[in-house]
Image (cartoon, rainbow, N blue to C red):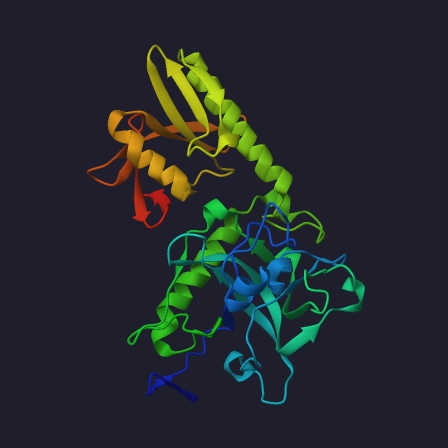
Length: 353
């Protein structure tokens, strides 16, 4: 039996499979520092320099390997992952990447590496990637802490990052000041089980056709073109629906007004925010500007949120939600779906069970 101090108390460590939670900056794709994918959060280094080494966490090499970074500021305590004191690395670790979006304070699971290798010390750039991991500072050299395989890793789309990861309190575990959480105390057992069940469930939801692809393809590939296609198909579907119902529509998505479509019928101007989703699960975010616009125009019935699910399929479905101020929820009168809102600077929205 091994014991570790925690808040001046002695707590038994739980042997329940190796799992490591890592806090990193928030990005869509983690394919490098792209203009359309800046990094947010991630600590003082990211705040000061505008980037962190995790910007490449889901960018693979030619062999299908992923190299993950988390800022630690020292060596990892691999003994808590089952290693001996003299071992430089440990294998078969479920590494869960966590981050906080640009609004609010909650942290969410953004993805994971299955059966990963975790290193005690920071590792230099492997030979095959020299020159392929550029950083803004010429005196900075890219490093990593974790190796995973694309075929066993998942990066969740932004609108599907809904699993909340706790922060440590005096009575419960979670992330503290460190970007690493081992979650290996007895009190963490229930949360670990929930996370592993969640990962198993999400893995089963990945289309079988993707599972049959070679190691050169990432499941939940952070595909910019695919994301743009989902958004465009959702916009086209929404405009077509409103036009079929007598509205005259205009695409204003590039004007940053807090909505994507303006629809006119007689003397009424309806503002429509469109959310395109590749799957069936309804979970999405509103930016601060969208959220403000929704609260401003909804009482007059002049703001709708149009959610297009299965956007890439011919069987895509449109949901038209209106905001109920008194209940602080979105409601689809056609099928009775109610969406609860986690009211922050903006909002994260999920289906009410």
